Length: 473
Image (cartoon, rainbow, N blue to C red):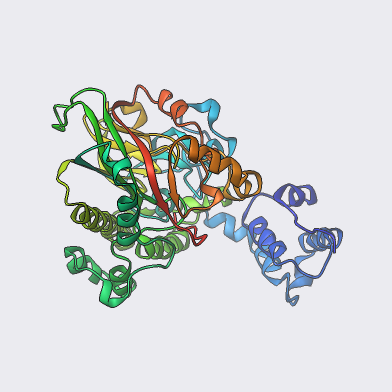
């Protein structure tokens, strides 16, 4: 059978407009009905011209119904601003057009106050990854993201960098014994740990959140799939940092990246659907549906988001405590920051809600961690408080390739050679997380020199990631 995949441009050529009817048509096409491409195009054209004739058709009835209701649907839509509000872009030459298009749409929302695009930006759902958006009294579930409160956590130990080579096998076993990875994975009842987060009253917010408490307990102290990791590496302070109290030197450090697991994903899905039902936006902006902060739904999402963020932090706390106990080491410094979140902040003298979807808070003096990849350095940074960037910086290197493209094009021998050249032991992970799938972290850092100061450099050496092909990131 011929390939009948049809895209938006094909539909536009038939006379379809970029609206909700196009979305329904594309969903129908994904079902791979028993027609070839030309037959599908003919059918789509016929439905567009005479939708009333397809109201009983098992395949095309949804499209016919929405075409007949398009005028009424259009009247219900909240209009966007006609012009895109200006916003700052950092490292624009290395940002794909899709991410900039998504940011342009976000800047047309009637609630948008300001925005910025970080140098690691790439296309996502709704707000692009690396997008920062300040809104007036409105919160956007997809402006926060699916993995609510995803974060970085760093522990610098009182052990020299030489400890890595001298105790390589021990450190591998410590990682394997004290971490668990992958979408849906967690701990059996007899393995679970207790934590104050499980007593948080916000678990009683509503039945949806209440139903997630056992899953939260099961996954407490575990990590997701995709780009989430737990890794030992060398932390190098080229100069003594008085504020952190760490002297110049090279130390053993632990760096973790993960989020709110199934709890956050379920919250994101529930409130995104709710926002879309309440906030009817034009087709191109539908994934930016927002909730008025003063409504019951908006306040409820805010509470649920904060619970998910606290839970993500608790997961990191459990992991770091387990590993520190196993090492018997003392902490020299602990730094943690999150992304995929929304904050109430001041901007130009007014209170706004700042969404950082894959962006690091970088207010003046605020510490943050910007990782590279499994084979490239990450950076401990201190924010400069650049208001044009809405006090933000990148949250990593940013993807250069989609996961599918990386799997198809990157060879395992090339990844293995790169790991060997950098003295890195990899436990788990797939080709979609190979360093070559990411932008050059040094280019990204150079593009945000006015946003952060580099305090220290982290070089990964023993890296554990999900090895089950899961994509919870």
